[in-house]
Amino acid sequence: MILKIFTLCITLLSAASFGTDSLRTASNFKMLFRANGLVTLGVHPYGEPKFGELGPGYRSDLAVNTEMVSYKELTFDFLTAASTSIARLPETPVKLDKIIYTLTPQLRYSFRKSLATVSLYHQCIHTLSREEKPGGSTWWNVLQGGFGTKGAYSFHLIQKYNNRDFSLRNSFDVNLNAGYYFRGDAALIGNNHNYKYDVSGLVRYHLGLFRNQTIFFDINHHFWYSMDDKVTAKISGEVNYVILAFDNIATLYYNHCFVDDNPYDNEHSLGTLGFKVIF
Image (cartoon, rainbow, N blue to C red; front, side, top):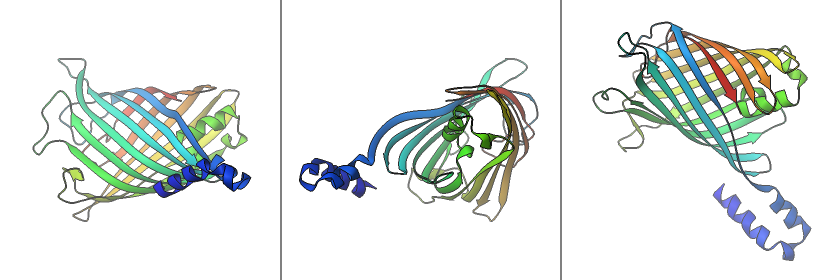
């Protein structure tokens, strides 16, 4: 990719000598610097996770994906995200539990109705109002590849609503990702986890589109394969009622986690009611 960018820069500087074909090639290279993402705020009205020192209370998510540069249908972007878990205890209404950071540089290639991705997925988990467990915080780096239909990704879902796309009626969108966890003695590779591979994805069903309102259903699944040959799973379902869909999408959502064996950010049996903005 770096070699392509360098070659295109040279082509642009020498376009006067090489004619209109060189100019046309250089015009395929674009500096984008545009952002999209989502914000959520939810409350857990019921449920008790399998793992965790504090009881459930609230959860907030913020994700910003910045598209940096593109060449034809190939785009380089960078995802920055944070999820904050807040406990609700008898002696205090709010106590910060943990925060999960995500940093992901990514290459994606767009087809007419789908896209493919290759990314370096970095995630770390830090406790907030309590001491870290022995050995410090938990983090991992994953080389991940994915493929899916465009409506399974937030930045294309908005385009569908803005264009009043008829495919939003009684239709499905899906994506699937597979990752390899880097392991070794280097300090930045990973810490306090035993994962080796994972598979994750989304199945989304669009019920219909009525003016600027609709309902869509999500099934999220994530499976981890660990170094001791065990498989753990997380499966959740979510209903989104779209109350506004113009330049952005605002939804009221309900999420229920059917099963979660992940010890690091466990949401087993939790229900969540909340508000979401996709921009």
